[in-house]
Length: 269
Image (cartoon, rainbow, N blue to C red; front, side, top):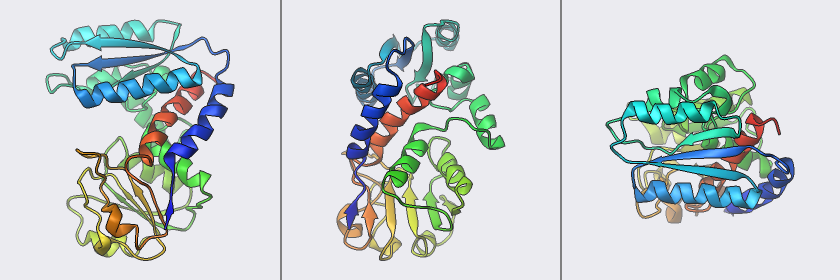
């Protein structure tokens, strides 16, 4: 069993991104709505990473009862500010807000997370564009370990816009044979056992047990559930497969660094 070490790869990418973004005078705006502890932690990690790379950040705090119109107005001001090179709205948002409407208010040339409808239209057309950070991070991690997906059978568990859909599209573009599994899929273990690579983004603790895997497989665990538990039962599965990502320390660090890869592309670096 080999560990796919996201922290190690992230640290290597920090050095190259620091060089690429040297002299960049654009700021990354991060909007945090409410006071969820997990969201505050994620924002903190992004700001720390920005400091390591040498990028200025602007954190905008909004109450969890902020009117939707006011939030969108705040985003519009950032859209029109030439000093702002990218905008992130930390998810999840309170249920009182229309998430997609808020995300769609971000100009596409500043949409670092690539979650707006305009960004998705470009992705669906197959344009040369940025993808959501977690999907990008997964592909980068595979590349860094010289894992070629062309012709490989890949099972993606989960079909969210954040991970499942975009990573399936990126894999398809690289010639992989992708099966997307979800709650309505029958006999998921039967599918995953025949795969070369399993990517689980279901958000279900310890969903993937030894009954889902076979020897020689590559396992990417995107899950980060309560108590820092992944979708994969690491102790069981790591005894069977060839490569596996840990939780934490696998996909998480790759997601954060990929945000800045996206930012660099948006500002032309």
